[in-house]
Length: 213
Length: 213
Image (cartoon, rainbow over all chains, first blue to last red; front, side, top):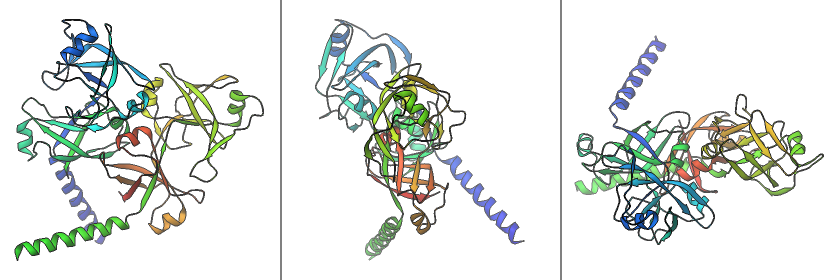
């Protein structure tokens, strides 16, 4: 009798947890390999006057694409070849690398949100037409979730909110300090870099559960 | 009056949590860069007959040391130079790399505990005397905590138990599936690889809190 009670108690608890989990909002991962966003001026310096990027494939975020073109970025200790250019053109050139890449290049980069490039290190960029130096713009991207307003509203998330995201599996983990960015230009997607993906054995399309801090 | 009650309630809760946290067992991190353990046979093949490793520096685990000698490991897609040999000599050669390294080399490696090398990929190893191939032995080390029996007993941990470990800071996270290994040959130390360290912005000597699953 004691045993049956225990089984019932455990069953109820498991069902309660499963229900809670199934209600937790989730997000699909896009793993960001190192890449670069270019200003029109830097694009033309690297590839020639009047140059336009060729689309290779669309990314999940509407309007964003991977270009056919790549560049080489050069640090004091090493260089990284075939760094993909992402379009469209931006106001300012920005290079997004992993911490592993920062060691390879021999630079000290900081964890920053996209666009927040003040006082970040510069780098040398090689294209087919020229080699240029930028004075700032290299960042290690802060992990973040792109979120459309409807989804944010449904789950009571707000722009710039910090959350945690859990992943299951062999290298299960929970990332804290994940920043939510809400925009009607976004679809629901979490961006992590290759170090973070490898640490959690996470691949493109894997699903994480969003937990509020 | 309501406000004062609320302040008291919050204060009591914060004190309770701080006390709980301060009692949580902790562990100090050692970040494992890629490295290799060699059998005497493979050491002699790579460096010459009767060769003995020269100690460069002691590691934190008693009796373990980094040797002055390094090798190059060669995959189908790339190679990694200056891979440190760790001593002493082992029964079987074992190469420990990160997932990032596995992509660089072009091999598909699995997450395994040290010594569990059955059905793992082989690799080519270059030393000053020769270049050799091993048929198995490349692993991505499963994150683990070395723990002396007294510490394990004090906190009711047992050998092979799985726990989670929390790290604070800019890239705060919690690693699940961390395996505890208890031995009187060990001092308390958590080993993670460079991908895991970079994902959490963790460096040698950082302290994590051990949480039971």
